[in-house]
Image 1: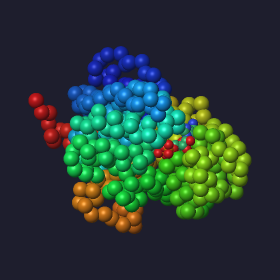
Image 2: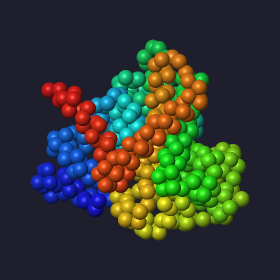
Image 3: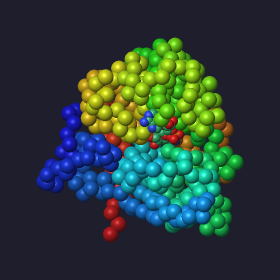
Image 4: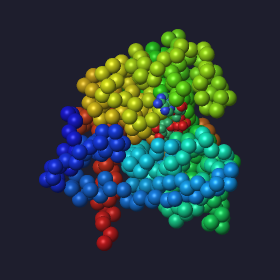
Length: 435
Ligand code: NAD
């Protein structure tokens, strides 16, 4: 399907299409949304409703730093949609996080939950800060004040945060504690991705990478490839990238390259992923200085002659510049929004099977849902049970998206959007508009 820039918006409103900022992740999400909306012939009012975030919270977070100075940070929480259930989404700590990025990530969560049939809406949070330059005490005070500022927004039946870039189990534990102090009871279902001791789920930490592995294997089957014949390159060696690399290697794939912010690491005979994970764990989660591989640049990694490419770092890594040189047959998007719309067109033309982010990395929110269910039941599942249910959910979602893309003769990304938007739009029609 040829790419059309905001065609649907233009045709339904009879106005010139807005000039899009191609580096803006919200616009990039909307471009895919538009194509799906056109296929579904969405009613213009419904279209507008589904592309508008339900609520946007911007909050100033004063923190006393270790040297006694007060510093004010800016934090966001965007609730994109809560038609299917309480809203769900991670919190990102980064120096360059901004409202547009958080809006895009919140909308992606809505579509992602719908793709894997998890009864949640979509949300996302962000705080502009550099956690690498902050002490644990400063991070704790920042997290607690951010939570206190948003105390009426969060809640197990309202909006449930989770970790995202630069946030982790410890930060979730502080949110749980702060929320529980205000609620005057321990409320462990208010966050997911927390430590197991505090009501976290077995398998949650590895869930996103595990989901990436499951859908990648499903895509290999569709293309008639066997894992033992496939070479893999993984961009990003954090939670998602390192887990996906380890599990794909365990399935027999040859992981020949990985990268993180320190650069790329290549070995045509296959890297020792467990050794690299141990190295990074002992080195503040960085591969910097790892010796048993050849150095390559990030761009070289993306265009290596491999069967599978797993972008698991950040947005906008696969662009119109490097897409023509990508040789992988399968791209499995561990990261959110790693491929720009222009790059998508090129990859489609070149016959690359792209497993879109809203499907490929939905394992995390799926086990987050399992965690929330377990917290509310007060009954906890074994790792084996969690993994079996996750694998089944990811396989089913892959098959549904694959079927939708065949039905409408579109890419898997557009197939996933069509499926998700149709589901949320149908729920909205059933609920009706409260006036
Ligand atoms: P993380 O902070 O644990 O890891 C990010 C990794 O990417 C690090 O290794 C970092 O060094 C690397 N990186 C950053 N910029 C890079 C660059 N330009 N080139 C190469 N490497 C770079 O984060 P994560 O939790 O693994 O998340 C990664 C991506 O997956 C994000 O887009 C996130 O939104 C998405 N995601 C995460 C989860 C989850 O459960 N953690 C779920 C769904 C989606």
